Length: 91
Image (tube, rainbow, N blue to C red):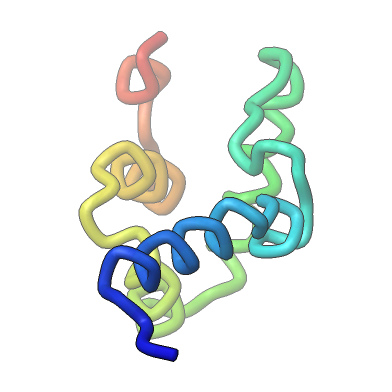
């Protein structure tokens, strides 16, 4: 039986559609649900604690996964900058 290009595309499309987000991500819940303002503050405080425990090389390695995501990079910069004012976080 000869497999045509069109049939191969259809098989691939069907296989991709059969894979759920949970299969790929390990969850079907959004990973960037920021929650209430209180939850956002808690998340930032927790992230700050994690970053404070890292040296510069570890932070650089950690940031590689966010290459091009300016919002994440800006938040990390604010968290690791000593003496940042509330104005620097939009307050």
